[in-house]
Length: 163
Length: 163
Image (tube, each protein chain N blue to C red):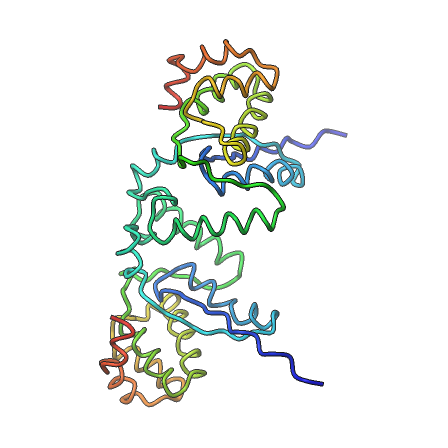
């Protein structure tokens, strides 16, 4: 019997400061598993999209921002998970994105774990995604080399992915 | 046995030129019925909201507009319903909104039927929601008085609701 052809992974594009991204990050792996697929984590900055669409972030949009804050608390109760907006939300989080793509070059599985840990940290424990040291510390908690991650962030190849 | 207290209706706010509003309009009554509730149709102009949020319509937003057009065709296939963007989409549709609130003053049930017929006409048969005569003709198809509807649209009380 031949193996079934591998299904393509689910590409999961999200911003580390997206409230809806957080709830999706908590469920995407189980969802993919139900469909026999893997997850390709793809953090990016929504700010780059807003330059093209002319839109702005939910949290900065009148009416929608207030509604989103209400909706996130409601979703947290529904899912039974913690949710706390950082004091200075939203952060751009370039160091977090760069750390992810640096790690992914050599260890995609560790990068996926790092991505999930970062967005969970942002929405539960005030993890500062703009602070390279805070991100490197998260990586080290997963057994990755703290200094190597710190050095990888400004690597030109990584910066070309996440500017 | 006492009757259960009446549940409040589901307020259904939508723009007559909203693609997602169209798909919702096709399902909202069945959804409400499943929950023992009625539907309070509330057509309004998204343009008034955009003035506050600083956003603009999906169809006019780069990237999102293209995606929405793709998504609407996909939704139409999924639901097995017709869907055709009017040549000059999106229309503001003030005459349609005013006709609705005029009729609703004396016959809320007829107004609800009119609202559904208008949004279905817009997305299937190029119904011009900016043309008072076209809207009055739709009302007459439901047994309403064509000329009374036409006269009701510019009524100051109605215009105060939908400017």
